[in-house]
Length: 182
Ligand code: FEO
Image (tube, rainbow, N blue to C red; front, side, top):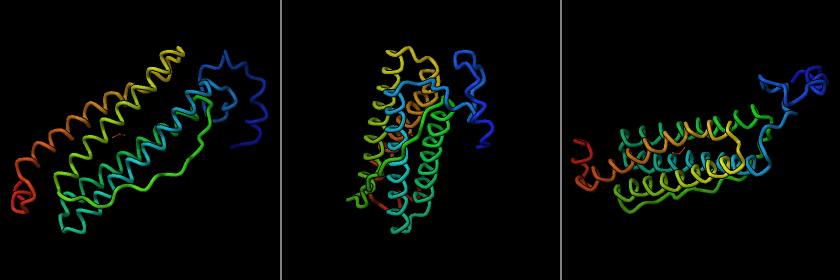
């Protein structure tokens, strides 16, 4: 950051700043509890990315490149979700504090189990997003409520896709010919 911008910053009255950018970070527009919740969600999105990358590795090892590629795309999407939160936290004058990312599951007993895990995982993510929306509503933090609407919509799509994938896999089972045809 340009140090001049930082030092000039203090002449602004935060309540009057309409356009917020990184140079105005000192104007905190989120509470500590929202910041903590967003940092936690940021970590959960990175974990999701790791989780899907682990699934991608599982399918790579089984020579199922189509599935491996699909899960890799999911991993990339989750990384993008994390970065969306990262950018938002700074946009509203908050601070990102990165935490340790838990190691994901690496072994599955069947293809179906992988897809079931994605569904259960996305349900958990939906719950945690909704909990932050609840908190932001309680705190009358309209900006964060608005920001999170994108995630609410995304979770509807992701849960629907995950559920559909489980149904398909239940029909196909672990038959490789079925997997290729599917
Ligand atoms: Fe970013 Fe699928 O949760």
